[in-house]
Length: 86
Image 1 (cartoon, helix red, strand yellow):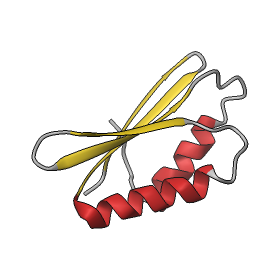
Image 2 (cartoon, rainbow, N blue to C red; image 1 turned 90 degrees about the vertical axis):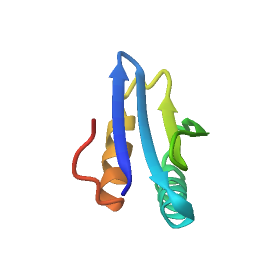
Image 3 (tube, one colour; image 1 turned 60 degrees about the vertical axis):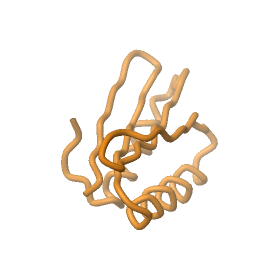
């Protein structure tokens, strides 16, 4: 199961997606690459390992003056069928 956490402040937004295994990883990476490529605003992304063999892919937008990140994050959550964020 893919878990999501969202955090936002003035012009900063971050979506963290935690997953386990190669299948979930590919699903997350493919989704993000496909959706992000449609927008001119580009995020910083990084992946980190967490406990029990899980990883987290983090997507961060800085200086998001027009608040486009929210729309992008909503599309990512919809495609990944994530109903609730922490």
